[in-house]
Image 1 (spheres, rainbow, N blue to C red):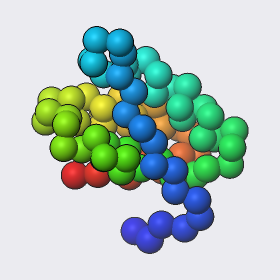
Image 2 (image 1 turned 90 degrees about the vertical axis):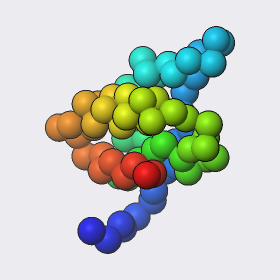
Image 3 (image 1 turned 90 degrees about the horizontal axis):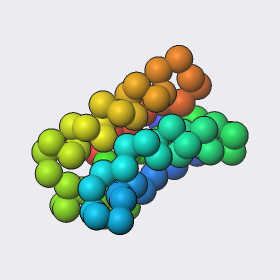
Length: 79
């Protein structure tokens, strides 16, 4: 698959305790769509890939997959 257009490297949301805040993902996706972004690149493009556990990466990917389903957003996951 070739990527075309603007690709947004999203940050991974954390709460005040340093835990993933997956509730924020829906708002992130909505913002990208409102801004005309068609591709979300998640899970490491802003440097957090080395600090996330495998389980955290899986949870983040799963949540983004749920959120983009049925939208115009394409999901790319750093692995």
